[in-house]
Image (cartoon, rainbow, N blue to C red; front, side, top):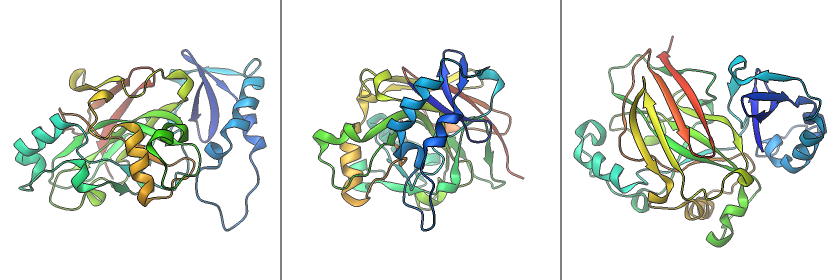
Length: 286
């Protein structure tokens, strides 16, 4: 099953090139009062919602995918977790390119640990990445995103994939420079997640997925998740040693070699096998 959030918090079931509007399934979500719990309410109740979606889908009104605005499939993650330099060929290019490393000695993920991105940087593919008006190089970084489905802390690696509600594409946009990653990667619109939530039953082996990004039709990055330094289960377990994970938390798993700058007017076409494809525009912030 593939679920999307579209046109201002409507819920859709993706069926080929159509979306069935199953927003009525959201009526089963519990009402909340302050103080709100951590996590995303939809993801926390995904099993109940899914059953309702299946019942509604037969008669639900439908729209063409190209007629809707796709939002991030997760509305309220408690955190966005990201993995630095988690592909060895990206480590090598970062060491070789002064435009990436800014004089820093580039190490691997086991040296840096993970880092957090601001929730306010999150958008879906229906919005454009808005580049701030500063004189810096700003790069695309395509990554597989994991959406956590249930609360967990100090999760054993052998059980880690049981905590995944689904998969999505993500763009971990970055401003190159000497500052901490959490600063340079948390500008508004710098975390693009979409086009929808692809549930595990649609993905045969998440540890062996081809993916690519094209900018203005030219392939820039192309790799496979089997080349991750920290694989998916290890990433989840590792993250949970420090962060208590909640439903809707997003883990961006790292980007391969081929990162490069984008400019206003560019179009980024992103694809991950079995997960989906999305096009994201680039503009200047106002």
